[in-house]
Image 1 (cartoon, one colour):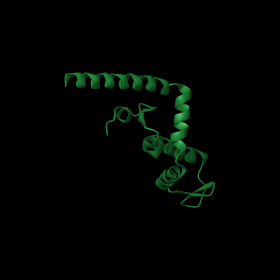
Image 2 (tube, helix red, strand yellow):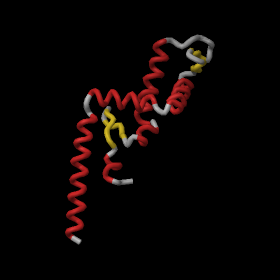
Image 3 (cartoon, helix red, strand yellow):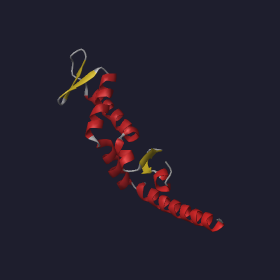
Length: 121
């Protein structure tokens, strides 16, 4: 039994080393840009849903490529940029791509989900 426990401790240690190595490689600027692009843009249907929700908060409707306020005026570039920024932030925390690619968003970085690699549900 003790031998089995040591094997599991050794295996866990090996997995933790692998996760640390993986985490370090994920923290590079290039990898973060790639991962953020992936998560913020996929799935497209989910991004559109979040965009509609954010627009409704500001009383704006997206009509094709234009954004129209409830009073009929076009939304300003600043308002559209603010909405897009909010959508990007939400996608980093809510996107189904996170689970699909075993990622978590922590302290501004997309990192490997340690629980997945350790087999914790």
